[in-house]
Length: 298
Image (cartoon, rainbow, N blue to C red; front, side, top):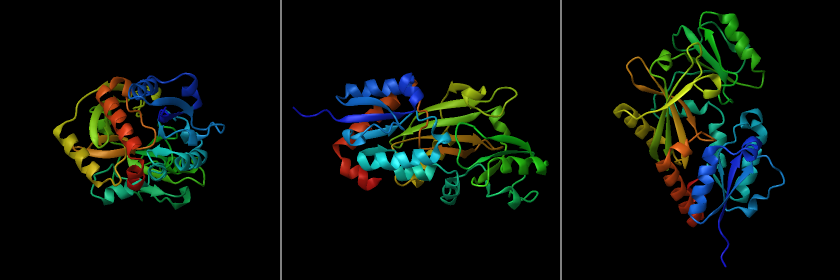
């Protein structure tokens, strides 16, 4: 009897003990394709990943607190079985300086200024004008260590950058006020196809859109401008990630600006996104049937 092909759904310890609805939806869907699917804590050193044919990064929503260990673990897993998204993609996406490369490929982004230390700052050294600034480390996730600062308060700006420590590069961006009205868009793209989009708005007195910071999520649709923007973005990515979430804001003219390109462990809203879930399952079975082709493209 042939062995069932086996998939590890990588999660944090928290979501291994109390599974997230999206991970359960993916597990059940993969099993409907005749695969064996298991929720596996990414940092469980007792797991031998050569027992799996493929591992997919899902609710690893603690990785930002253990970045070096996480990247090392992804490297190890990727040597034992197929890893999606691949290790090289994960490493590239783990530092927000990738935004410079995306901009160089012609994609409009929220303006960025990168600085290695507070001592390297000078007043108004960022190449844009703004009344308020967003400051965060280039290696961060989920809104942690993200600050909203008056652009004219240079001492506060220095203190924010200094608080990240000497080993962290900071990113400075203008606060895009449309987030309070039009909101942020989070578009789920699977196998190159836009499958789902969420509108996210911060709490009345807040500026972060994440639910754990008080933000509100509402399912919405893409405009023609959104679709064109996403198509251009997909065209410049090589290799194409199996899954990603594209977070973007609108400028004063209502044109999309890339905020974040989430390729590591984005919420894909799979329990609310049946078409995306189906496409992801189909793509995983295709990869398992042609593993050498996937490794060549990764």
